[in-house]
Length: 398
Image (cartoon, rainbow, N blue to C red; front, side, top):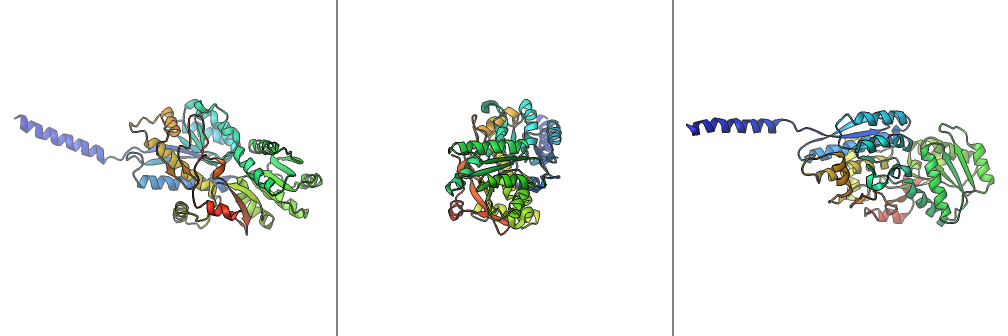
């Protein structure tokens, strides 16, 4: 009699387990915020696409312990207020972390939201130095996988000084990005006992900088270091061309953007900028990424390759971190601790990440991972043949 009772109960148990297993696993939600429309969409869209590609690949491999990853996407339109609202909304979306921000000013206005909520934020694009220095590193929930301006500026300064270009004119916009970048360039020059011969500040949207360019020329500048993220870089280049002033233009990664290269056309030729990733099939990892991106988004060209590659790597790094949390305790402090103590090496597109973060260091990129990009024939290539060779081996953090 007991046996007869046990069999139906056992069958019912198996049926219940089977039904539970048949139910779709609850997605693991990750916030994604950036400028997917508006003036910064040229690098916001590649960031979005890079993240989507990573999620698709990770889900095909099983996601997080059988749970698929799901992006909760918010558009900040490159507007600080919109970014703040998007960040506040993400707190209500049950996300385990957020990947976000291309614009330094937008990021800075939202940092407190993540820090107060103890929700990890990983910044894949915005490079303003203060983003990861606003809070003491051990307590900070703000991580970054892009090259902060504090390493981009000295990297470029080292290069131009080696070329004998020591009379530097700085052209920086009045945003937090331009302000911070200008300060980083001034510090990098001071480390070499140099100071800029001219500094020009300007508002976003400026159409004419001839007066400032003439002043820089009169000051004896033999190189222009620009720190702005939009079409103003092209205004500077075309202004130099109009003056027939053939000094080089150098800068951080925005000189690789379409705003500059397509906006300035032949005036952009020869410009130099810091890069973490140049869209050339230099090794197996990059070939795989570029091929997968082209197939998924039906394009032969990524408008801003660095944004796509860094976002792609960021989603993988976050996944590697949370995969070390085997008990499913995906609280903010738990995810923060996992990011700071990643046990596995991630062989990425932009770098080989072995312990990219720690309790005392929230920036994954170091200067040895940078290469100098050169605008040549309307595209970004390696400025030095040795960098192309070195790039066959993805660099590790130093």
